[in-house]
Length: 183
View 1 (cartoon, rainbow, N blue to C red):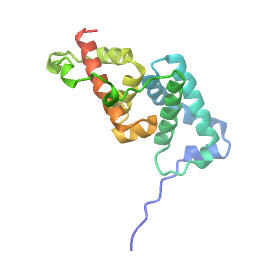
View 2 (view 1 turned 45 degrees about the vertical axis):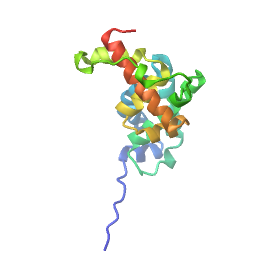
View 3 (view 1 turned 90 degrees about the horizontal axis):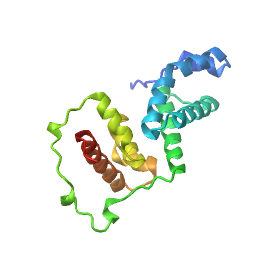
View 4 (view 1 turned 90 degrees about the vertical axis):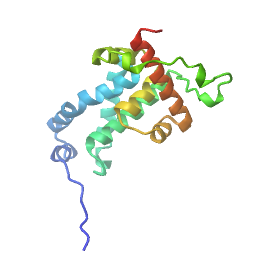
């Protein structure tokens, strides 16, 4: 006899589905800081991140009856935040460059960086990440901080997987240069 694992229902979500306004506030308070940080890491602009956060919660609350407990509510909400952040970046006309299509690019030309020599202090790294171009920062955040693989990132961004790998490689290189004080 095989036992089926049923998803655990969240009492707070159930309260929201019954129209409990305080429940909505509690749900917002529980997740807003983490989701804001996710939006900010992708957008690198506080006001845009706040707007996307609010739009994400509105979308989640409007569609709460469609949440099926296939994942955690936080995971579901994070996906909404990431998708809305990516859409906001698209409005900025971010250019995704596929390294395989760039003529004259030779990876041998990349300047080697001694990673061990870099002092990786958290605030220094955060500051350097915020200086990266939108495309680089987005892929770096999705890969390193959000835990997506290149295939998933390519699907989210609607680009080739090789493009996400290129953006990630260049983001790392640029980040290391920023951390070493090279511009």
